[in-house]
Length: 296
Length: 162
Image 1 (cartoon, each protein chain N blue to C red):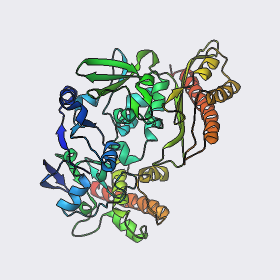
Image 2: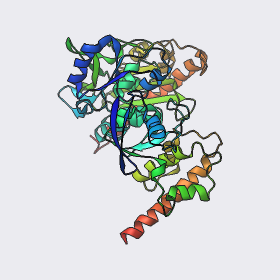
Image 3: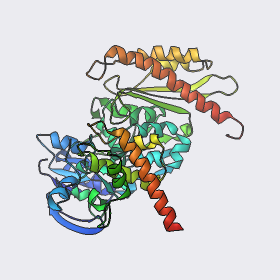
Image 4: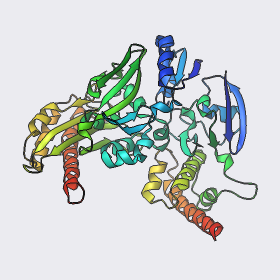
């Protein structure tokens, strides 16, 4: 690795001040599982590495007035172990469990995974299916952006040079919303997704129809995308396996998969249809389980 | 330069290293602890696995400065002068390693697993080893050795409790 200056930030405020000072020549280090790989391969490394990994204020998981707040530095392992998240959003636990392997999940952070902007990331789809927002702090102040708008291209996000992603919020209206995440990779461990899909939905208990269905697809377009046409098809429609299978077929049209050395576009299209139907079925099963007596 | 003070295998060690030094390089080159191996150097192979504050991590993906003030356990910290660690004994008994390059990382992953889950299922063992690549295709014997070590460690702690 080429030489750089290393500064450990005490907290988010300190990190933002350091970014304001060093901006263009600095990079933020969180878990390091992507950044160190990048730095080792790079011909030019940033002059300054701002290490935020000790900023305790970015490590909280809490229910707030806005919803469920997850600090940017919460690791994938911490998501898997959080009783709050396990109870409320098993889909996030499933997604965290598919990231890399134990060693990388212990270091890698949720915020770090998101800022890479890689379309095959595992953290993105389930959060997008739950309408998550990200909180961004910079010298100009704080702003919130829907996660779906945070990604603007492969490895490109709206984050500016002097800004720090500080946290993720799942809005209050979606607390406990049934969701399901599925990833298809070539192996279980250390494998990027060929396709990953998350679905979330409510089921109207009286009419047994889909309410506010959301489908997010990863690794099948330059950014994670919502399967909007499939969502529109399902909204208000009676719950049935046939409707879910049809939504899967429609979702294929919402994606633009490419062929690469991992899989062909044609194979990915097939996976989108299958995984979408299965993730919808998973979310429905969770919705039904929550309706059982005593589980209100 | 970055000053680090790390408790390694129970002993506090200090060093002053360039900021871009990884924990792996610090262990191997400054402290002569060459058990953790430099394999892929990008977090895929797990040959550099060490335990930092009770968690297995890839030492190649952590800067030395990030380990400052923490506790690190490496393969050198497992055996005592009297005997090998029960995990090492089980790996030896069952001939679980062939070339041995992945061994220190695999054993540290197993150690972290058994510290947390004393009686893991085969599925939990497989999950714990997913980040350790063995190209001699020796996983089956590793899994049975970890099950054997788990039994031995449980028997030891039962003896201590008695």
